Image (cartoon, rainbow, N blue to C red; front, side, top):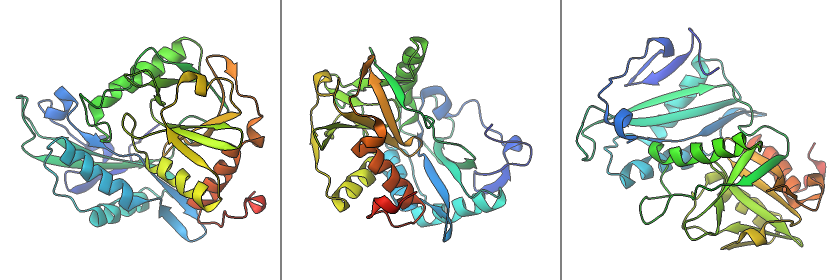
Amino acid sequence: MYYNEETIIYYKGNFIKAAEAKGNPYDQSLHYGYSVFEGIRAYDTKNGTRIFKAKEHYDRLKFSADAIKMPYEFNSDKLTEITYEVLRRNNLKNAYIRPLVSCTPNMSLTKGKQSEIFIAAWDWAAYLGDKLLRLKTSSFRRISPSSFIVAAKVSGHYINSIMATQEAKDAGFDEALMLDVAGFVAEGPGANIFIEDEGVLYTPQLGSILPGITRATVLDICNELEIEVVEKQLTLEDVHGKDGAFFCGTGAEIVGIASLDDIAFKKPFKETIGATIQKAYKALVFEKEYRNIATIA
């Protein structure tokens, strides 16, 4: 689903066919998960194909590499140009984009010697679908900021996410909600969470969560629309049975949540603040006006 015989990627400084790409089985990233990545989206807007918040994503890619002492000599503006070329060569307008920085062979537990970048794009609908989600509180806790730099998107960190997601799916749920090491609500395996209660949105404070670019966008939208948001530590009691909730992330976009641990949220999602944010976000990425959301289809 990600590529075919004609798909073009950017790899090791060249545009090549994905089917012809060759890696090295001794790469440090393969053995230790020592790589960093981003998830980015492009949209077919009224002004043409636009990569949403390309600079923010590529700047965070550099931050992630710097955080784990990975060599990084790439320029965000240049990477954005390359990404538009990947889209053009694959005739993609609405697409998911995956840049990944990996390291060359090194079997020791020391920082990388040299890094390489891979950029691919493909058609991908919303990562979590467009139906309301049934969540299960995971038994796996979010990685500890005492052990990892949680603000960095490091490939190895996401084993934690895979375990949580699969546990939820094996139990018959759509996705997981993860707590931090202290037992407070953190986030989904690949998305941040917002909870609505009596006209106010609540979201976990920074510290044990990924400071998502979509999360920051939601906060900007709330500021523009004069929606009150409180960032604080939240317990499961602060979530169970409240008015509404939604996940947000580049892959997920804005997706409503029906229940947590089979405890339903009170309001129909279409009547929640989350539905308003969902419409506003959709308008924003397609470069439409969203401040008067009553006009948004």
